Image (cartoon, rainbow over all chains, first blue to last red; front, side, top):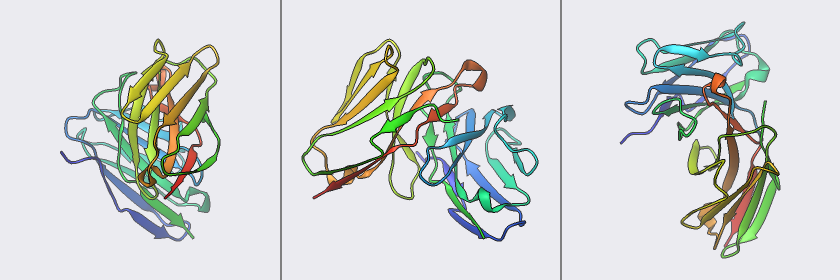
Length: 115
Length: 113
């Protein structure tokens, strides 16, 4: 069974440029999470989807970040325009459902470097 | 915000030794999970312990949970070089957050041959 797929794995852009990350969760997983992991830190939640609905985006900087999960499967996270402080690893995770006892399966992440 | 804090931040041991990592958290939880992250890779779920459990085993892993002290420990026995990774504890959030995980900063474990 394929795991969570993310692309690209690495992205280097100049500040003020737009960037987009793509995630394909494990088949059948209704819940999808985007996390950001800064160097030396643990991941922090940006947004959570239940099917196609964003049910928790309180930590998403909405002035420059946007996300979508149109058909309740794949998801895209966008930053426009990117700032130096956005350099981080962006992790996508999925779980069968948003349960308290869920196991989240993580993708390999996209390492973003903003110059 | 990060709820858990792992201790130590870094740990270096030799193969065959045991490695113990600790995690403290602040608010009440339903469960606590431990994840491993190899360099440049995503996180891999290791073990989940529920708030009404005190100890759990999985292979060479042993996890304890003390809800009165709001702390957990992860013990890796007979460590191997392949155990070299960062280890994170994660607590579940409130139902209002959809149980999104709150991660600590992690413990970086180095196992030398």
